[in-house]
Length: 220
Image 1 (tube, one colour):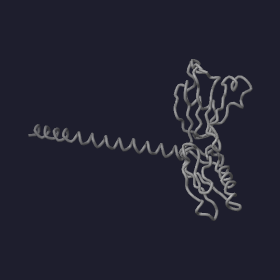
Image 2 (cartoon, rainbow, N blue to C red):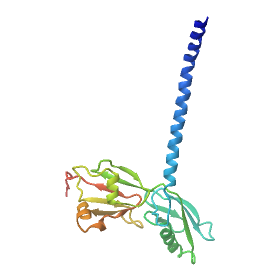
Image 3 (cartoon, rainbow, N blue to C red):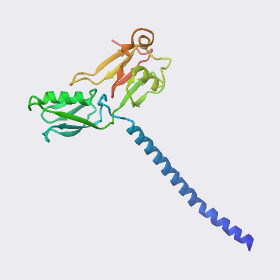
Image 4 (cartoon, rainbow, N blue to C red):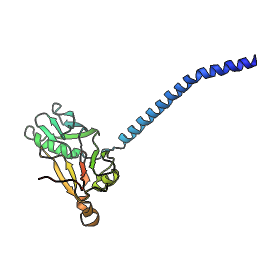
């Protein structure tokens, strides 16, 4: 009887085991998801918007024109780097600080309103990233948590590949006020070995750093 009871208990425990394993699996999955959400929340919280923050694509801005609710609105910065506002239409936001954009909007509103006072609050930071492409170890989109130079961006991407044309670096940047995109050239050797520190510019949100290959052929 004792032997039979042990067998029955063992069977019951075995039968319950899949349910226990499933519950443990669900709990583990819930823990991983919660941990991922906590990391993502911490990353977003670390993007502190200071007065020097450069606005980028997909940022959400709260634009207020004093004593004019019709002109005040919340806007999303479009992929082309602009926002649309009543009366003045499109205006470039990317690459400006909130204060600089407020001043630019105020200047345009002066055509329609006397002494307009504009304030801007960055409600959501969705753009603080750059793109590193070409002959680097890890070409990708990189979120930025602080101001980053060309050399720092190359480090984030794992450094040059052997085929990299490191003295032919190119940064593509959104143009201002509807102008064509800006192309900025830089040389790694000039920055590191010569008096070319001015080429090691601070990258702005949305910038694309391209490291060409030495094997690229330029066709006229």
